[in-house]
Image (cartoon, rainbow, N blue to C red; front, side, top):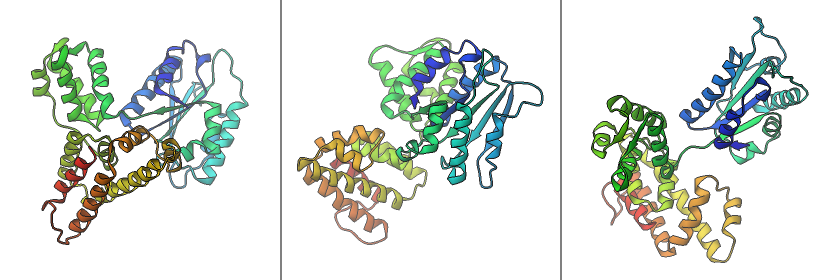
Amino acid sequence: MVKSESLQVHLKSLTSPAALKPLYIFSGDEPLLMMEAMDQLRAIAKKMAYTERVVLLQERGFDWSELLNAGQTMSLFGDKRWVELRIPTGKPGRDGAEALRQFATQIDSQEFGAEGPDTIVCIILPKLDGKTKASAWFSALDEAGMAIQLDSLDRAQLPQWIAGRLKKQGQEVESGSKGQRALDFIADQVEGNLIAAHQEIQKLGLLHQAGVLTEEQIRSAILKVARYNVFELTEAMLAGDLPRLNRMLDGLKGEGEPLVLILWSVTEELRLLSKLKAASDAGESVQQLMRSNRIWGNKERLYPLALRRVQPVKLRRAMQLAAGLDRQAKGLPVSELPSDPWDGLRLVGNLLR
């Protein structure tokens, strides 16, 4: 399985139909990045006469023979075909897993000449966990074609991504601290919502000519379109990033997210952090602890930092606060806590700085 950088290298190598693969598998949970990556590949394929498009959606009652027939049945019009199979849950089920393994075998058994495959199949999946990546059906697909994992951007990557987008439309921010502040401002406004970020950057292209954008121009044009989720909230907590945590709490509260769900997620993270802190302080390997507790993605980077930074006494206090906030959210009186449990969550975050 490759990342988006390898896909870009592959796309540049597609100078003839023979260079195209008969099967591509896209996996990710960021709609904009998925859409753009597929659009790039589809545009190249279209120039090479893959003009007939078929879209299949795996849902209840889906006939998997449609996929198996896709690579064998010729187009009614003699055109080359582009077939998309969308599996929204990433879980094809027993019959689907077997059909996907058969399809991968079918692809492996074919030989393609200078004209390339008659049909290109793209399978679209959400972000996959480690167990799914190790499954027989996914491994078979990965070997038969090209599997691309499109990772979401975290907050630290956003300013550079925004600068790159501005550059594509002939714009850039001021040099020095003003420019960095402007990029950080945009990132704060659009975090967690790349489609809206894309739209805001396009708006800057419409409002202002090519060239340097001032911080004032950017601040007056960008709307607050950030969207947060509980998973990102716990990441900010582990990172000790209190300003970001406060922004997320404000956003989640404004969006009406259930406080009980957020408290549960924060408490579970604190329990796991406390468990790993005790084990690592006792001499156990942090990397082994993360593998055994299935800590992946951004948290694989954040946990070692948090374990080194957070003192046991503060971690115990954070867990006590979380337990009190849980009682408070259920309507029980708790002394020495802010009247608003959302403010209590800020106290928890402050202890993990």
